[in-house]
Image (tube, rainbow, N blue to C red; front, side, top):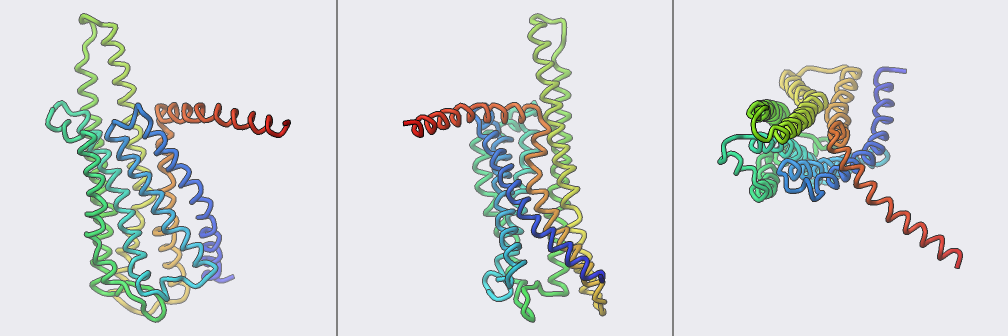
Length: 327
């Protein structure tokens, strides 16, 4: 079997596997929302932003995976519909950036909450965070407006124009997918970690109410570990699954500008790498947030309480069903 046929076969099976990933990802993001919307958590701005990010992740997966699997067995609709051709990549790009923005803002909110400066803490008020959540989609549906302008059906396929347009788009992707979100996450996570360390050191043992101080120190230490663990794992997961996409986009733009002929094998390899970076890994990241949050014992505790509250309802319905059947 040739390289092209082998890669095509692998891509076929991986595309079908996206269906299972869609189910896992949507369920996981729904569970994220259920946990962070609980009474004890929903007043926390970080929780509100985690909910917004989870909703965006679920929308990204639904919007991309269902048409992709459909195109595996049917003619891709974007190759025949001019409007859909221009909107598909545009809307998906906007949804991806919105999800990254919410996660980055969650890191900023965690920093603001841990700050000793009252004015900075005011920025993390739930009302302000809710307004920001509403504004973010508006901004990120305006900024990538170049995508539908540079996309068209060419030779029966929905493609972006080559040359300078492709280079501009690749630079844009590198900035919004790699530099901006990763930099924001790293900087504000480190600042939040530093603030928490200072808060922990400010609690001195041996003073009046030492028992309470000891409890406060223990709580601060637990929150320190929980926060730093969740944030740093999110950064690592984000970089692992998304950094290859902007790099591959930049490579493809450079290749288009340089020009030259390609062999069938090289074209097959480049298309396969594009599928892995822009299709498979990005959707894998969208489904991974639940497992990232599950590294937190506080998250797992809230999740167990949700399941515990649902179980009695299921038992009651089961008992009613059995009673009806006997009668």
